[in-house]
Image 1 (tube, rainbow, N blue to C red):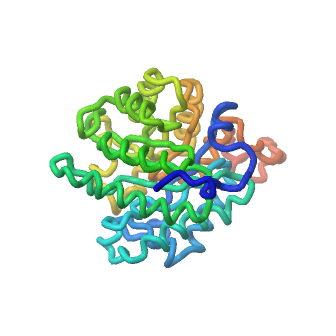
Image 2: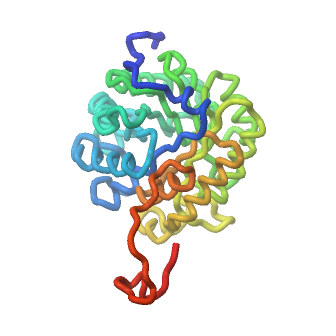
Image 3: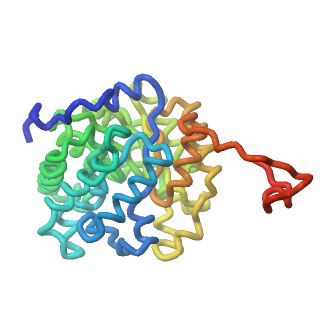
Length: 335
């Protein structure tokens, strides 16, 4: 896919890199798990055919994240590569799903937020198969060809356990001419499947041309933020951190390895203030792109926006503990 200036989005104010140069940018939350809870996504494969089958549900969740304070809406194209979609019978709908995902995000974002196209792990990379790299390139190019028809502002490639696959994603995005954000995921051990530390991954991706590098998914803030901090120390460019909003014990850092996955994940959800505290700490560590992943709901994003000073204060109301007019006052709750 050769660079093509016609693929660049029309001017909508400062782009992602310009915004990051001025301060933190707040991303949105999780889509597939939230939509599964609402009955629109199949637990297990978690493929995004909801984009075609129930577009209004996707648009509504985009709108909820936008109203909560998200400054970027991410297209719901996670797991939208052909071979992954083949597992649920949607391999022939790759173009429609990928293009529709960006279009839905764009329609909601308007001029209030940026829109990110999306790539993710394909489950097709195999270091023992010399041809798998080209297979992955083809899958990514097919997705990008469809998504770029709706003029996204930049591309997020995420949730890579193999650094080699993440580097392929960075390579394919660079050919589009759009800014790129590429993030790794770490499950049991804080090393990639091909044996690289977070710092080594960050340096490799940065050197490969990724504009933003970082970590996302699998781990909650307490277990992911130290890995983002390691990346922050390793590179001079922009760094992103998007943890899950699920509690897991330190000996099982990956929520997908818990007995609650995938049918009882709601029992693991973190309180909103935990995500707000994460956002504040991430900013203090110099993380510029602060978002969230699986399990994160609009209430989490709103609390993160408040912690970052990106949300308006609550409307004023009379508080009188001497003459209660609500249970809030009756039981003497406070902020």
